[in-house]
Length: 535
Image 1: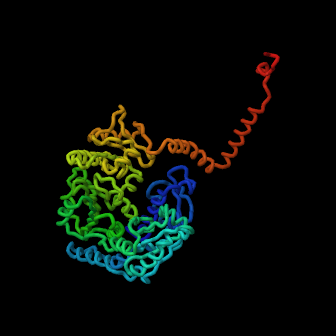
Image 2: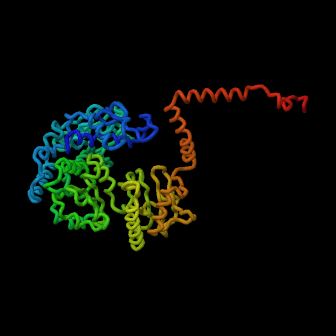
C-alpha cells in the first residue's frame, strides 16, 4: 500500500540521511556514537530544521517505520515539477505499450516548452533560508554573491538582465552569502560569485565555470533546461540503443502492474538528472531478460519486478540493477545511485570529473600512461575494464566503493610528478588513491611497484582495503605533521565537549596531583640525597 504518508516518509527520512553526510554535521549535533536516530522538522537540517526528539525505540525496520510515519502529517503534499502535474491527475499506467509511449512523449514535449509557472514575471528572486525550498519545484539559476565582492558587483548588471530573457523558461535568483551563511555552507560555496544551476533543494546541481557574458549565461541555462528529461522507447528498441551508448539508464515498467507513484518518481528523477545522464523509459518489461547476460543477474528475482532501473555501461557489456521494491524509492536515494553510476566503466580523469572522482569517498585505481602509444592504451584499458568488473563482483561494502580510472601522463605530467612523485611513464604507472585521507599507494607488500596486471591489481586493492599496505601522503611534510597532530588532539576536544562535567572533574584531579607532586617536601627515605652534608 502506498499512501501519501509513506511517500513522504521515504523522501524525508532519506533527506535527513543525505544531509547527515555533510561535513561537520555530526560534530554540530553532538553525535559521537553510532547509530543515532533523531527526528527533525520537515525542512532540511541545516536551514530550518528544528530538533524534535531522539528515537530510543526498537531498531528493527517495522518499529522505526511505524514511529516515523506516526510523526508525519497526513496532509503534507509531495513537491513535484510542473511537468508532472498532468501525470499526477491522469495515470499513464493501465494502457498498452503503444498508448503509453504516446503519453510519455507528450510529457517530454511539455517538459521542454515554456511554462507560465516558471519565472512568471521575468525577474530576479532573492532567496533566503525561508524561501530557498522553491528551487525544488523547477530549475533555478542562482548567483551566490557578497555585496563587498568586486567581481560580484561587475556581474550584477548582467545577472539582472538574465531574468527577463529567461521568462517562462528558467527561474533566476541570487543569494547574499554575507547574510545567508547557512545557505552558503549548505551548497558548498567557497568563493564569490559562484554560479549554479540548481535542480533540487538538496543542493543537487551543476556549477557554471564558463564566460560571464549575457549570451553565455543564457545558453548555459537553456542548454540544460531545454534538454528532454528522458527518451521514451519501446522494448524492441532497447538492444539497439544500449549497444550505441557507453553509459545509459533504462527504466522499465509493466503498464498493467507497476505502481503509479513509482513511475511518477522515476519521471521526476529523469527531470533532475537530464544534465548528465542518458535516461530512457520503456513501458514494457518483456525485453529485460534478453539484455541481461550475466548468469547471476539473469537468475535474480529483480528481473521479475513490475518496475526496474538498469544501468548499462560499455555498450551493454556491464549491467547494474536497481530494483524498485528492494531499494528505497525516494528521489534523492535513486538520484544518488544514478550519479554514482553515471561514469563510464573506466573513465579518463579530466578537469570535468576530477573533483567528483578525487574528492569522493571511494578508492580510486589510477593508471597513468602516454595515450599516444595506441597499443599501450589498448592493453591498459583492457586490463582496467577487467579489474573494474572483477572489483564490482567482489564488492561487499556497497555499490561503487572503487573507481577504476586513467590519466594522460603527458598532458598532466607536472601534476603527477608534484603530487604522486611519478617521474617516468615509459612504463604505465598505477596508483591506488584514498581521497578521504589524501593518501595513495604505489607499492605492494614486497616493496614492488604496482603493475598493470588484472590479478595483481585486484590483490593490491584487497590489501589496501584490509590495511596491509603503507600509504604515502599527497600533502607536504609540514601539512602531514599538522594532520597527524590534529588526529590526536581533536578526539580529546570532542570528549571534553561531550562530557564537560566529567572532563572538568578529571582535569581538577589531574591538576591537583601534578601540583602535589612538584610541591611536596622530601621524604625521609631520600632526604639524604637532598642534604649537602650527606655528600
